[in-house]
Length: 145
Image 1 (cartoon, helix red, strand yellow):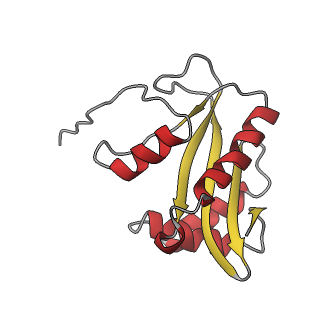
Image 2 (cartoon, one colour):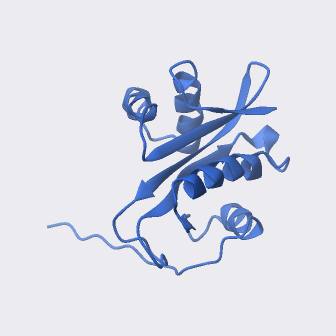
C-alpha cells in the first residue's frame, strides 16, 4: 500500500470514495470541488492505494475562522477521512492522517481539529485512538421561517 496526493489522475477515484462517505453528494459537484483543490495551498488530500484499488482518503484544510476547541488560528481541519469497510482496522486511516498531519506541521500549524456526529461511535473511537481529545459537543437547531 502507498499514499498518493490528489492529482488529475486520481481525482475521479477520490470523488468516488467521497460519495461512499457522503452518499447524498452529487458526483459532478464533488469532482469540481476536488479538482479545484489539486493546486490549493490550503488543502491536502491524500489517497491510500494498493495496486489499482483505492482504499481510502483523507482531506484536511486550513481554517481561519472559529473552530470549536482551537487555541489559535489558523488551524488544520479534517474535512473528511474514509476507508472502505473491507480495509478498515488495518491502520490505513492512521497512515492517511500521519501524511495529513505532516503537511499541517509543514504549514506551521499547531493544532488539528475534526468533527463527527455524536452517535458515530466508530469515528469517535478512531479520533481518540490517534490522539484527539474531545473539545465539546453541540446540538444544532433549525427553524423554518
